Amino acid sequence: IMGAAAFLMAENIGVPYSNIVVRAILPACLYFLGVFMTVHLEAKKEGLRGLSKEELQKDIDASLKALNTDHLDIYFLHRDDALKSPEELIENANEFIKQGKTIEIGASNWSCGRIQQANDYAIKHNLKPFTVSQINFSYALTTPALTGDITHITMNDIEYMWYKETKFPI
Image (cartoon, rainbow, N blue to C red):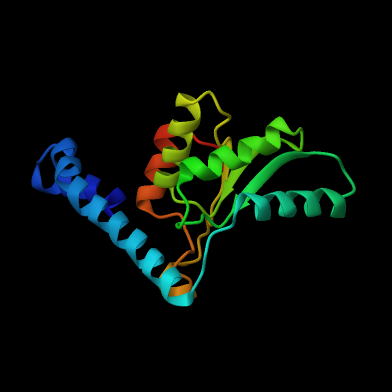
């Protein structure tokens, strides 16, 4: 929400952009905490549980069989699992690399914060980080509220700034 508005505010009221950014950090953190809690509580209410390592293994094996191949160039973890730590998920995905079943790992429908957390962990532990992201990036206005799907991650100003600053491939 703050993306372009922050630049306009800085110019119109004569305050340095950095001052506006510093004052926006707490509301941004509260926003992400609110999204996380909403997803977590909704998942609990619906009795949803995360995919186990064994279920992920079955999924990649089924994909390889369906595609009649022995490996994938990129294996995407679709729909971030808020019930699992990004560290656990990146560890599980790295098992597929060790098994020779994929070369790269991609994140699909993950927030930039969770991708960054997973990648920081991967780098620190000498694992392969996510190398690409598949996010809903459209001129159409789509939000979790409009789609009725609270797990739906769309390109917003916060996500856009992260992708721009990190030059992370989409």
